[in-house]
Image: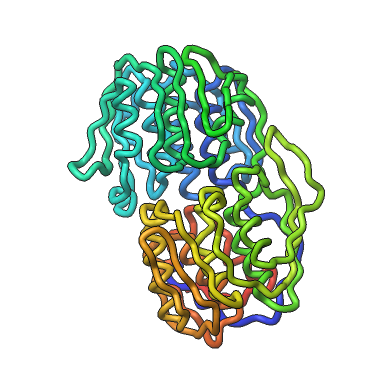
Amino acid sequence: MNTILSSPTQGLSGKFRVPGDKSISHRAVMLGSLAEGVTEVTGFLEAEDALATLACFQAMGVKIDRLSEGRLRIYGVGLHGLKASENALYVGNSGTSMRLLSGILAGQPFDSVLTGDNSLTKRPMRRVIDPLTLMGAVVNSSDKGTSPLEIKGGQSLEGIQYQMPMGSAQVKSCLLLAGLYANGTTEISEPAVTRDHTERMLRGFGYAVKTEGNVVSLRGGGKLEAMSIDVPADISSAAFFLVAASITPNSDITLEHVGVNRTRTGVIDILLKMGADIQLQNERTVGGEKVADIRVRSSQLNGIDVPENLVALAIDEFPVIFIAAAYAKGKTRVTGAEELRVKESDRIQAMADGLQRLGVDAQATIDGMIINGGPVYGGEVESVDDHRIAMAFAVAGLQAEGVIKINNCENVGTSFPNFVALASQCGFNLNAK
């Protein structure tokens, strides 16, 4: 799939489940591999990023049976049972895989090399290299602090107290995973609360993790015990449908079994502030994670100043939030989102460029964007090989005054392989080539 053509539609309807949560799928494989015993996983995301993590652990000697779509059986080897891979560990486009694996590999007795695709090799890794070095790890990178990462084994790690300069669940998780192998306590302070799937899952595997406000800590030297994991549907994938139904008249859809962990619901809170008609139904807890069915109906959105305390809780959803802002009445201002510039692409600039090509008054700032809602015209935009940008502009076409052509859409498969099929099923007018 190289291009997607998105055309206007008359309304969206249906009740369905989007793919499993990518963040939780990564962590299920990682912790299941490091646990003692057999971990059963259902709802696993069968997409490129999560499969890259799975392949890395198989390369390090972990037996993982893929029983059926979304079902895994992981035969854990314990914290000290991994073996050196014969080749470099290739993680494709997955920054989560590279950053979290670097924490695990820093505590191993063997040397490792982590590498990825051309896009990933441009993403900053000093944010994990520097604190890992403080713990005693030896991690070599390019002169620019990018991958490939060469991680020297056999180091004695020490717990540290680390004040993170910016909120990042990936950095926090990397250090917590390294902390499993460290002497003493590893304590991480966040400037803003970020997603807490690692902490929750560690506790599920029987490992003590302490959380007090924005401070998370654990002591090294424990063990993980196998468990069963039901991965909820990914709210980042659901976000495209939340915005799509909001901006498309005559829409009424329900997204089933979506993870609504409080550290991930920023997109819902932002859309509600904009006037969206969103209801959480059948709320329950599954495997330590809150899930719900989310019903969303069309509404008139209004521009807002997005509260900065919600930014870190919706950082992956901003491409499609920018689309919501383009269709909203009035001005939307986003600040404190500089992290978007170092995702799979510079998502601030890429989205601003694309919106401008569609006639939207969108101005990129250092840490966000200012968007004046108004007509969205047809046109041709670049996804810059970023899956979330490609899908966001597919949503933009639902009510545009013409067809939107999105180029370079191959990477949609990294998080949402069946996006076009599922979206078409509920009423999107898409043509993928």
